[in-house]
Length: 342
Image (tube, rainbow, N blue to C red):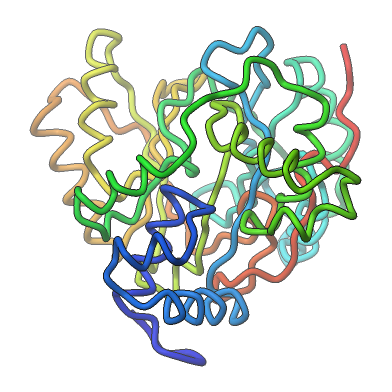
């Protein structure tokens, strides 16, 4: 909880949590679920977005059975002393770079990036990242399988009944194909998932009925990512960390299942390198890292912690440039620069 232009309280967290589950739920429906006047909910959400404490995004991703999956990687970056801020600014401008993190250890930063293939990833890092003035070295960790990721993370501020009521309101009939028209709708919703169909009508040149139908289809599609993010440091998460774990193959699925119950875990992926599992955490304080490591060690004594990275600042998250208080500043379209073909 915090004070800036206004008080962020339990109702604000409930609204954010509700939109994480159903990003386009009507305020009338949400009012009945939360037992709060819809006008109050509308006013609270407007304040959160106007004060840059909460924002939304929508973008295409891979479905679980996609024939052609994107390649994702975490890239460590070492900077010339005194040049880190310049490097952050340049990395933030590049669309294929989803996020930019300041971190501890021998690297200064790490970024998350997605491209169409291993070759295009290698070329992009070499020709667009390594050449930035102020960068003196990079190291790439390819993500093999993403078990958990940020668009699936929830605040858990609602009761089970409230969460289920929201899930039942969300469209459940996925589209059979990715129609070209869907890409235009996703782009129109990219920085505001609650835009009305009427507001989008002139931009898309389609009827309100068709746009509404396409939005419902996209809400059910497993290849569309809907996110509701917020200024984490202002709302109680003062630090972040990455644990690099060496996990025996037969323990991997059980460990991931255990990590799913930890609300600190924002992302979890198997990776290439000395460690084979990277766990990305949000923390209220650094002492929580000891508790998490202790829980893992107790349940999985053969799991080895190969490294720990502390993340004092997130400069860019899912396309949004963030200020030092973790509030959004501006949006850089995801994939806004050309990605090489093989």
